[in-house]
Length: 403
Image (cartoon, rainbow, N blue to C red):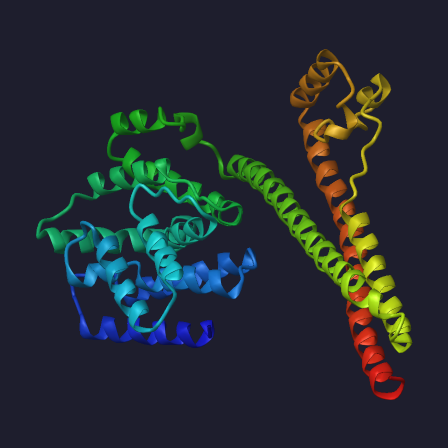
């Protein structure tokens, strides 16, 4: 399936749909918003290196997710958008499974958001991407004006900000990438809203502050705010780095398993079908041996890439005292008594420098292991590629010239 051509067709259809369903009341839920959501979804999807199929699913859902606004009220606009997408994709000959996933992604944007898959998480974060950007203030104003036009009544700024505060406090980004990129600015936008309402109502401010924000935080100097932000950013950075390493490790294991399976099948087929004919077809002996040896070597390197290496399972009191042991890795404690490990973890949690050092050391260790895995995998794939090329040529030459 040509996903690139289909994506262009989707974009053209949605653009034409907006042109033929103009609604002057939609100051926010218009083509500009849809294009911004698509850009945000593409940015997040590119970070997670989605394949062509999944990339098409999530971007198509982004194009269609708000079309329901153009043909009705706010209520159940996701359902209407999903129905429009389903009709278009069916007419375009798209597989039923892909249509189902596109509809699920669109429905996942319904508030409160409850995505269950990575694709659903990506479109949910893309839809509310502006919460963590400098465009939030302007977009929030457009949203209020649009709601006023659609409801045909004026909306008090104080009440609107109150609802926006509750929305930002209850909201959280679902992907690690969005949290790392947007959480800090989202907190700034939240504090700005609280401060604006605090200037009008001290009582409202005190109630709002009980939901994780204190009056002291509102009066912090800009210097203190700058100290707070990096801490959250660092923690998110470490989480993202660790999850990315884990994802890459899973990918490496899958690649190794593929290589082992393919070469095992080749070896089995050669042994079962070819070797019995070598007594009469002597010209095939060398090509067959080349194929068997190459496949076996490729398997060996793939096995080495997935072969676990486990340390002793102990750490000494000196290592703990010197802060030189990583208690986040099971290989350093799996043979020890729980009490000793518990005491060690208490020390880690009570010392922020030791904690961050352990996290950094864990990420570094994962990186070293990943480098070793991918190096062996590269060797395995290279051997496999050249083995296939040389063996096929050898079989062809021996069949043509030495039969």
